[in-house]
Image (cartoon, rainbow, N blue to C red; front, side, top):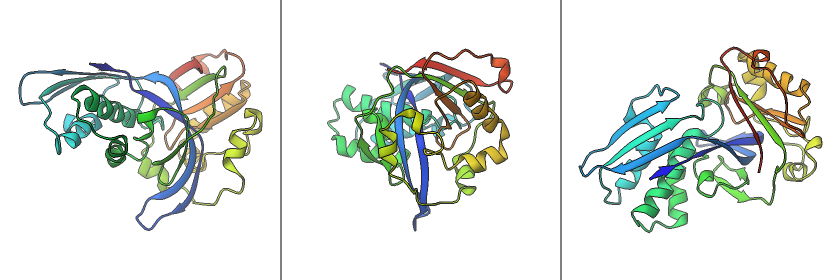
Length: 273
């Protein structure tokens, strides 16, 4: 079985308040994009699990990878056979694109269907939430208004179809914990969804990512990327999530030179559908 877990971008990310449990309440719009990993699992006829990877090098041992964490989570309550996993990593990590969460969510959903575990949609969402705050988003994989820790998801009739996306990740990632350490929570003064559902041309200066101030201060390359995308004519440009990647939305396919951006950057360009 081969899966193709996709990435997402955040349109706006407001850190509203710190909660008593140490997490933060936030507000954002999660939007799926076409950038994808490839994840394969095959029954091996043994009571063991093997994990291999290719593509972007992983810097953690296999048992700490979220793919195996998802498998072990289901194994707590269900009898699963030994599997060989191969993850071809394309979505960069530390980028705010949800790549690991997507890998885990796609696997949970696929194992449930493939082995007929009959886990309800509500239970599957709960399990995904144990793996990551944005993990459950990828179970449905449609535009959602995210609140709470990012786990309260309300589907939105919203589309960026026809817009051109250019995403650039500099050659470094940002740890979520580090990003949160530098943010100052504050209530968003406007009607977030009313602005989002209006023209994209109205977003800039209104729809913001609260992580940008602290991340751009520590990693000025990300700020320079945003300025470059804006200078290229992006209707809207923003950092995605708490990571280092920055994207621009354009009315027409943008033309760019990789040499205009930090050396070693990752690029992804698509027309959104």
